[in-house]
Length: 418
Image 1 (cartoon, rainbow, N blue to C red):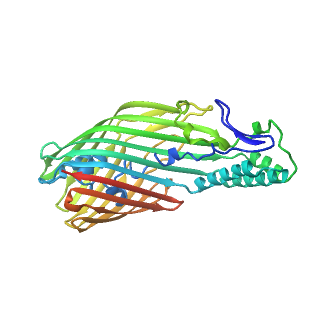
Image 2 (tube, rainbow, N blue to C red):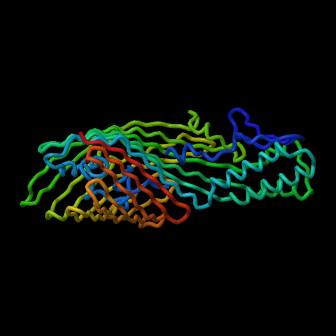
Image 3 (cartoon, one colour):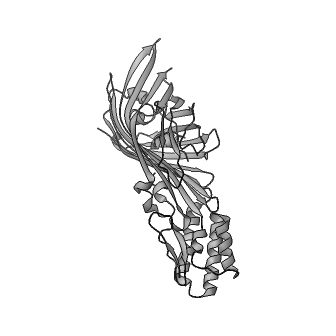
């Protein structure tokens, strides 16, 4: 029998005897990559801003200002109503090595042990297939991000307020395939070795997953001043910040996505943080802005698993932006002044984005943009999207993102004004 079996408290191994193999635990951790490596243009997803290349520091509308730059809440007109975002959801995935497909291939090969290993010749063929799949996945990695947000903005002339809940996360999955595993399976395929009990202890290929989920609960406020005749707005968002980290490692033959949220891999932390922003209207057409997210630096360690521990770094992210706008068109550019940090084991990113919106009709907006990582550690992406706002009461915004290295993303957002 050839089987995959997990022993309590240990990663799984391939166990050999004479009949079958089970693959129900061989999964890529989609929990990490889909419902949660760098997050698009900051620590939030907003369909309009992401469609415009991840800009928004000087160009956000008042209803989404709490996500990008709270100072822009003062830009509501006198007849603007309460704005509700319910919800904004987005995901971005880079799978350069197509690890997701390769894990599926690996799982299929393991299935063939169970379904087809009825003779020594079938065992050899199945071992050869599995060795080939391990070669294909050797050194592969994927990373992704996801987020969701709810926001309620109450505009007024003196002190606009907003209540926001946003969750954003990132994940990084790596396959560490050892050459010894490939050699062992290939020897079985070549007929120069026969599997014996105890051989499974020599199989050491491992899949690793690191993930962070950060949830902010904040109240934003803003006020406009006159400085030398120039309208200058200041906004601030104090918030409670809850962070959950996952440090998961398992045999690649026994990778079970349902185990990722087990307490043995998870560590949580709650603290205080604050966002802030400033804007200045140089003219009716030009707005400059600066936003600063997570002004309180924090280092949070993961749980130690199999002797390994990483540290998640929350650092101030300062971004400058400029926007030109008239009745029909808004054009914007944003540049990060500080890098985005995640786990210490991951490379920093630092983005620049450019984008535009054309309001073709009162109820139809067309958007496009481009976002680049100035440190060249994340994939550059082209962005585009549409906005539908019938009667200016219901707002549906859809965004798509595409780049090299098998990178794609999507954002959907529903909003209401009352």
